[in-house]
Image (cartoon, rainbow, N blue to C red; front, side):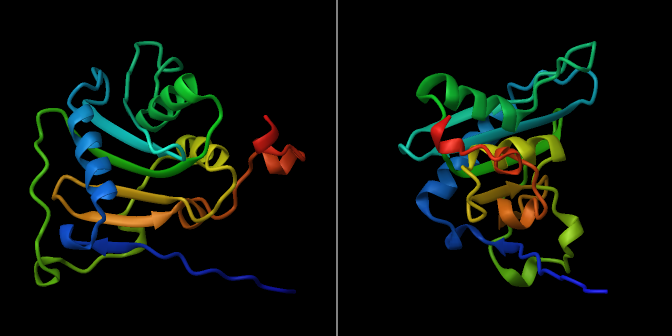
Length: 179
């Protein structure tokens, strides 16, 4: 028997440790979250993606009564990017989610105010959205993912850490850069 192990890295950050692009992605994801149509789950999610051309696209979850037609926020933002630019690479994505009517708290300003966390405390996206993000990261495991929770805690990881055993176009022998 042979065992392969891997470490998953999640960084917990305060606002001073974020770039201006990261702050803007989180801000836009938080703003668009309020537009979500979530009559079933009552959980509003906003996403913002930075394309390789430097443009930010936003999306929110849109739930429909038949469930199968529901659009996830991350999927919505990536689809908007593709609709505007064609198949380009996602460089970075921010996700913000909270129950309807719940305002996001301001992020803690110092590490002293943080509680103890485990990797499982951070859901960057569902499996469906991780797969879409992986495919549109042009299979670059270093694409950054940011998320802010209801308490305002900001975490950062990569698509490679959030989705460690991906199935994507490369699994089918498809070069995503060639379309």
